[in-house]
Image (cartoon, rainbow, N blue to C red; front, top):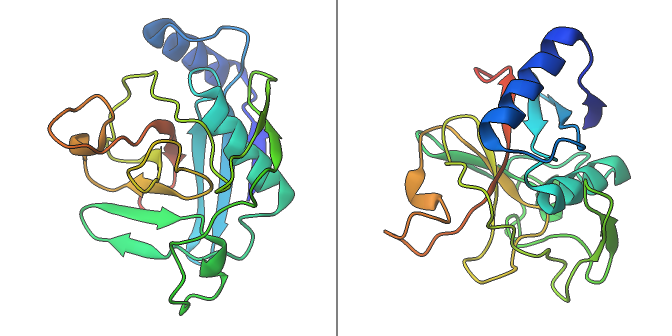
Length: 186
């Protein structure tokens, strides 16, 4: 994965408008993550301004090479595609979907605060923004227990509002921390 920041006046204007609409942290710029896969490339905006812990965790893992060589281990048509388990470097591993970052490893949130992953390699839940699990959004995967998200995330291919942390129809709580902005048809 390669991370790059947005450049150009049109993109800055779009970010300004998004920040205005969602009352974002004006001092933090969102970043674009470029995903290079065997099927092509897509790009996603990371919501550094509204979910700085989750976005910062993702950026730290991407920049460290954690995601390099990992396969999408869970692809469910009309639902979602999940990625980020280190055991999924082997696409046939029966452990795919069960791994994450090392316990106790430090990372920096997108707003510059220091955090340490817990004993399971997971990060604090960031259930603060009411952004729905709509088509193309990136959402933190977890086991359903508090603070159980680490490196795995999924891309929604349908509107999965029942996964929203603020939808009380199910116990699911998956915060959205980004959205595919280019190459969604991949």
